[in-house]
Length: 257
Image 1 (cartoon, rainbow, N blue to C red):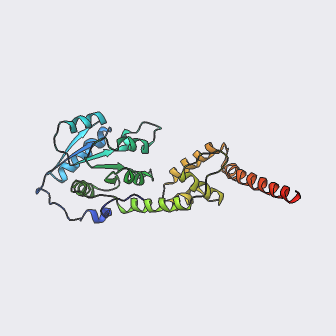
Image 2 (image 1 turned 135 degrees about the horizontal axis):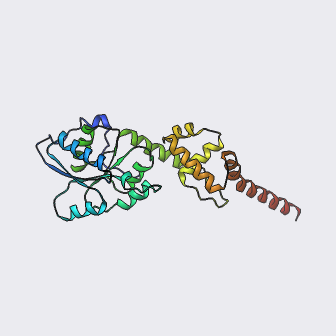
Image 3 (image 1 turned 135 degrees about the vertical axis):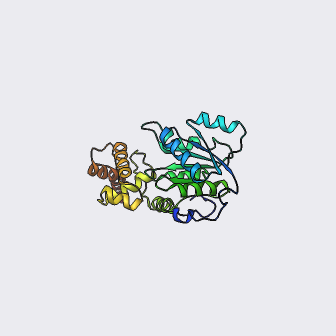
């Protein structure tokens, strides 16, 4: 798993993490969010919580780049990745497109927690923090200050998901050899389908939401050309069974030579 630098505080610890006291050092932050309500509320809330935290806003990536191009020092960019993702699009793809878009300015991404792979991908891309929308303004303020000071912010629930993802990657069964291209996470879900586990149990074991588990199951059905879970399990075993039968037949033929 990619290194995430300094020890990442939990939301509880982050709220009490040592750092600059409000008023001692001004910090300029840029909030990129295409949704007007969350953009205005978050920027206003952070500024009220900490008057020394100057939050400028941008409604698009181009606008954010234009602001950064003015040369005004910006200590951290806070980005609502979900708001930049088109309907039906991939949040992870949007995140990959943002990586490096702000030069050397540290990036913190907002996440609603539905995309379990977001923190892992963020850490791989060098993103300095994932801020869940479930935290309050006090934690958000400290996260921005922590990252602006050179640290990283990955709350403990997100770190747990990172560890569970790594364990799932290590325990994933091999991909079906019949031509179906499954992701590592889908192979982990498929293994649990073979064990007869429900979406709820799969979600609990992999540290993802039940809705995300359903999405992975639908992806598996499409990849295998299956109409239901039982057919998907049967088709996933067919290539292995065919290979075993072929090997058995080959061995028997040699015995008769």
